[in-house]
Length: 273
Image (cartoon, rainbow, N blue to C red):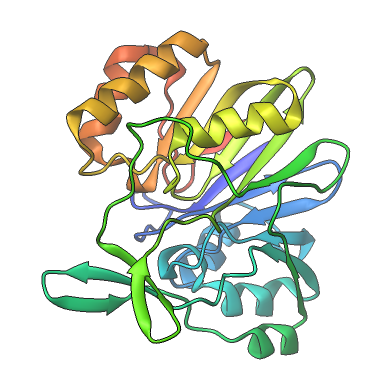
């Protein structure tokens, strides 16, 4: 299996573009998958060309949640991909906001379901963890089983005429079984990277040995970073590739604690697993 990072905040080389967001191409024996589409779509498309990724080979797109930096590239990407199945939670189109002081900044999707369907994308809404094929699972509705992975009150979603705290129960993750162990991929891990990994283990019935994606440790309290690192050390991971919303400081702390197990997932990074 080959995973190519097509969109992320930083680049691994001078040939790859970067932007705030995330997208990973997964070359999968049961059909190629694109996990998230980045903020613009342009970065995914241009990096795919540079990195010899054929977007027309993508059969499945998975959208981790309805924030602009993870899925606003969808329309441009689907124009390249053509007919495909798009998996997301049914709340993908729920209006989402981020509070900055007194300002309510729209942070949701910019496209419509009709627009994407007109380009050849077929939405499949998944509100419970679901097995996609013999080794790939969508992990969603992740329970909050620990006390240290909290969600900031600055994240809001609109329900009716009210803005309420966004608890990201709609967040979608991907788990792929590799022999007897599991790779988990997350877009932002708003529900908590430890919670997500534990749910991946529960759903697949196997140890999670590899992780790629956002961990939402940027601006996290020191105790949360500490507890997360303690969990990583205890579970003896083979590879951790923190990305996107992990933040530089937390990434450095994780790298210092776990050494060569940690491989940053910048644009242009290729993982052969």
